[in-house]
Image (cartoon, rainbow, N blue to C red; front, top):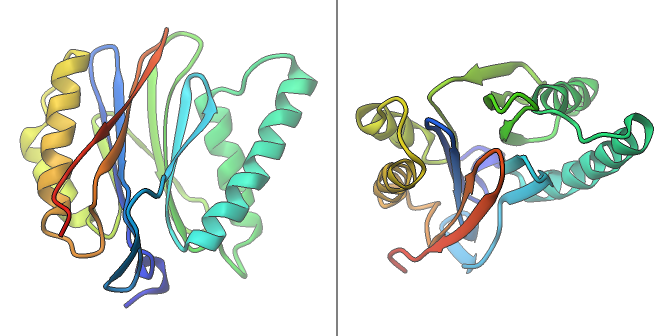
Amino acid sequence: MSIQEYYGGSSLAMVGKDAIVITADKRFGNNASTLHSNFTRLYKITDRIILSLTGFVPDCQVLYKTLRKHVTMFKLSQQREIEPKEFSSLLSYILYSKRFSPFLISPLIAGFDRENNPHVYTMDLIGCVSGHGDFATTGTASKSLSGIADVLFTEDMEAEDLFTTTMQAFLNAIDRNALSGWGSDAVILMPSKRIHREVKTRQD
């Protein structure tokens, strides 16, 4: 088992007409043992950017604190909130700067820019960025998530339809993965607001 899978965890983001839904499971484990069932992997960067971090949890926590510092410094120096593309570049730079001793994580970024265009990004351990116009997955259930999401995804879904589709894909995928599950945190992200929801799942 890879050290990135040691604690488990999966996340999924889908893009709709005027919304992005990003969700992550709540299980915190030690290999196959479940230690905690209310662990959050979704982090608010700004009112319009949500970050999901899966992988080696100590690295996730250190990286999030580092990102918060840089985002705060950006806001103070530029007198505005950071944009999704700028945030992905910042994260990519931090990961690449640690390439000889990398953070063992899989980040997923979802957000809207000032023109209200949706952005979803993933990247590898050393910061190679991939942009996605439909959906993106990370974590131990990533392969199952990609297959189910590809079947269920349709373009230009409204926010509630997008939420339903995202959760159908996510819950079915984590049911097939022993290292993810025990509920889900979800954020419906829109240009003018965000809605946080918790979804209960099987507890086995």
